[in-house]
Image 1 (cartoon, helix red, strand yellow):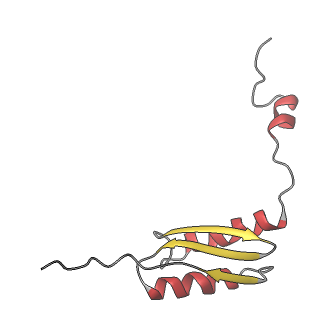
Image 2 (image 1 turned 90 degrees about the vertical axis):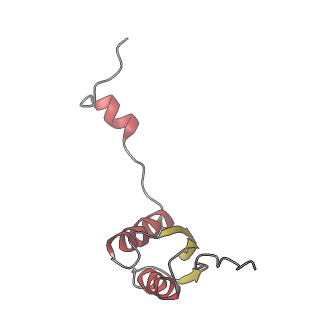
Length: 96
């Protein structure tokens, strides 16, 4: 038996994405917003959503980026709360 071609109805049925949960939808929207904004675009921000609460984690360039990321997450319709655990890069200790 040959594998189905991408235009086969069976292939579309097996590979069709299921309905997205509200939390997954919110995570996608927040991630999209963070990826578009020039302040947060190149930062390492992980977005998790549980019961409409957005959890931002990772390291960012500074406190301004942390604030902007939190504000962008709050602006997404359907977000109930934002837990912003983003941290600035570690400071190097001077030895001497």
